[in-house]
Amino acid sequence: MKLTYEPVIGLEIHGELLTNSKMFCSCSADYASAPEPNVNICPVCTGLPGALPVANKKATELAALVGLALNCSINKHNTFARKNYFYPDLPKGYQISQYELPIAERGWMDVTSPLTPLLLGEGLGAREQLRVRVRRVHIEEDTAKLSHEKNYALVDFNRAGVPLLEIVSEPDMRTVEAALDYTTKIRAILRYLGVNSGDMEKGVLRFEANVSVRPVGSEELRTRTEIKNLNSFRALTRAAQYEIERQIKIYEAGGEVIQETLGWDDARGVTTSQRSKEDAHDYRYFPEPDLPPLKLSDAWIDSIRKRLPELPEAKTSRFISDFGLTPSEARFLTSELSLANYFEAVLSKSKSSAKAVHSWIAGELMRTLNESNLSIDELTLSPESFAKLIDMTTNKIISGNSAKVVFNEMVKAGGDPEQIVKEKNLAQVSDENLIQEIVTKILDDNPSEIEKYHAGKETLLQWFVGQAARATKGKADPALTKELMLKGLEERRK
Ligand SMILES: [Zn+2]
Image (cartoon, rainbow, N blue to C red; front, side, top):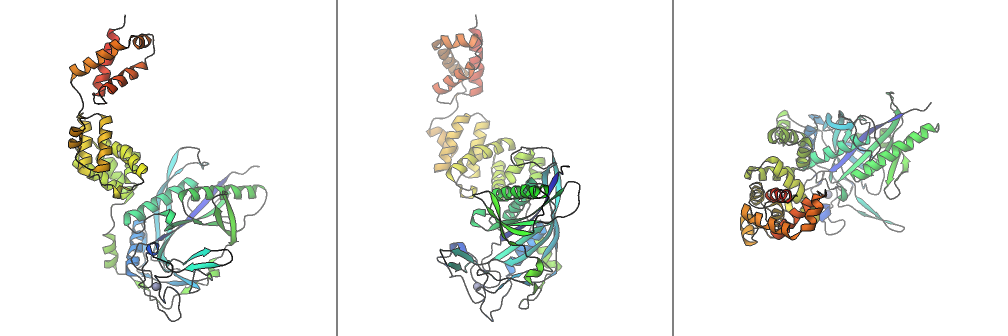
């Protein structure tokens, strides 16, 4: 009998917190801007004997903010613990983390998932809403950075002790797509909250996937493997998919999956064994004696809760109900806070519809940003000018093609759209007599094309309209041109 298997996926997300100083000392946490290795260091973050840690207040606030955004309960009494393991990037021989009492736990996040597991690239099937439980959110510290040379390694402690947040889910995901949606949504929330830049290529956000498979219908949790250090969404999906298929093959061949920690070899597209998986007892956790418990008051938690901004899900719903956008239009605009803010700023200055503004942002604006490799924050195009341009198109003062010319000019050199239209003589020609004159001339000049059109080659209409657009340098009102051209062609039918 051939069994059908389903994956069971849990995720750990590690995100550095955007604080000025490190988690337990006052050294700068901005290791990316450090002029050279081992300059942002002190006795605490290099683990010298006798040095005492002090918890970073800002990091605690940010961690609580994330906990609340993920619908967690905040533990008013939470504690630090030592996670012992020996590795050259960990100078103390242990990492300060939270174990028994994390700052936040028991939250959730709604994701969408295909009803049946799909292989990557199979397209969209029926989808369901799924509530993934967030087991815990805890504070810890990042490690130093090792660079491996030929037969030695170099260690840079600038990153050692940078505040790190770990978000651990329950193994609630049954498809790779659900895992992808979960991580995408959490990344968006971290960016909305301003606690993490989400720059995965810089390593400030990393995923770990716990994967097992079991026969469909079974409730057992089988042996899982843990894939470490997944630094992109692509790596996450490919690694999880590979691991699911690898485990199914093992079971189908009558074998057993071994609990282990795996790495992901992106070039070869395979998971590789790193070491047999440690259990919690291997780390010999014990309470950190040098740090008192964090005691958080209700008033403090309330003050953090008040700082929660409108989150992506809520913003998406509002964009749909208030602006009449479709769910996919709204999700696109709310995928980044800066994009959503820009959209609202343009819309508030514009008399055009939300759909028109969305279509300009999703089209020309995104194309320009992608081509110039700019983020929306670096854009100098003011919402006022952009809104004015969109309104000029809506009111048919300029044609769509001319609007693109003006848009490119405004992105490059700024300026007022009305002024640019004047300077470049781009105002749309809507004078019917003038367009009729051009249409008649084009028809008179092309008798053989007219014959082909009348013989059934109706696609030539577009060609005729194109000739008129060329003759007016794109300024003729396209709808009117098409109407007159069609009329002229019919009149010439014998
Ligand atoms: Zn330090």
